Image (cartoon, rainbow, N blue to C red; front, side, top):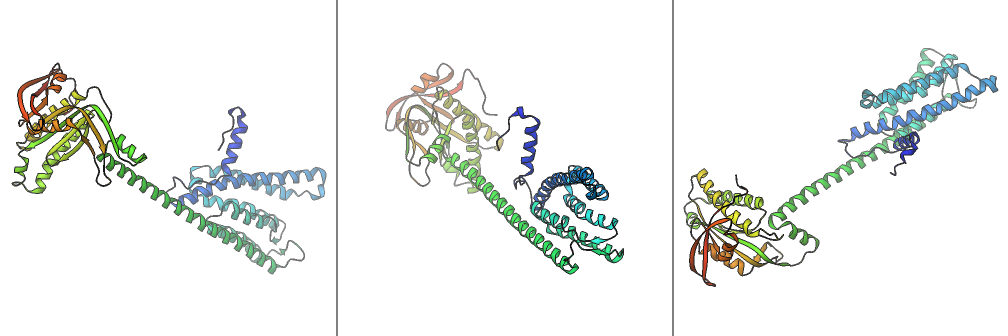
Length: 448
């Protein structure tokens, strides 16, 4: 809805309020249909009271004009009753806006209905007769069915109250019946109002059923949408457990083969020493639970250091720094990860009374990273750097972190490394390697 300019002041506020009165309350944020009915009735009753106040005001003005222009048509008793009805409208509107009125709109509905329909009855009783109202009754019955077409039984109660007054005045008080016109008989009037009431109540009943069906359909749709969101978030979470976020976004936007080259990447392989032999001595469930606890700690460390876990193969763990988002400190980050993994495993052994050891190997350089395949795909790395990191681990020493000379040159200022010497590396020949011991200028502790 377009907002009105603030400079309009009171007029803008009045027009906005009128717009809101002529709108149907939304189904949103309502727990059940009964609560929506209550809100709908409250909203429409406010509109009904304001229309009734305006309507009766015009007739009061007309009657007052008769006092000056046509005294023969002036009816002081009728004018007094209309003033009383108008006052009743204001009181009903005031009560409607109170907390009690918001909880019990049905009572205010009957108040509004009987204020209008009883007024001609009271006027007739003061004149000593009992009569049908050919103006107020049909107008009120149809107006209620149009403005407040819910809870048909309230409409029936309102109509029953009007006719009960008529029957009491005729049979109990024994006032003579005065029909609205000469040609109308009492039987005709009864049949006439029977069909008016029946049509009004059937219309209300049908609208109420339609509104209830729409309400249930909307909430079923909302529930389905919420469930879809939950499943989507679950699928997104599972996808992000497999792929880095940037890669997952690219795959969703354009499902195709992804391959990227990175020149400055640190690759780490870690392998638990003796785990394969242990698998023949420990029950499978216990073995998997131990491995899960260890690797869960490593996952936490990778997240804290901003690294990307690539995969686990059996009891081997692979993590990388510098991709899919490049970073300048990729070597320092992978070194800190290795040191924290070693410390984490030591703490795990202390807590569980185990004696696990790891071989860790690190290498740095260019790699190709990407996603291939259409089933059970993963984000993986290829290149000589990956092979060297794997060899650093497999040719390493238990409970030590073995690195290449390139890693050594990058870390020697801030880390303590021991030269292991020249070793024969499968597929690479002789290589000078180093053992990473600790950081000299420790700036942060990621593992608690």
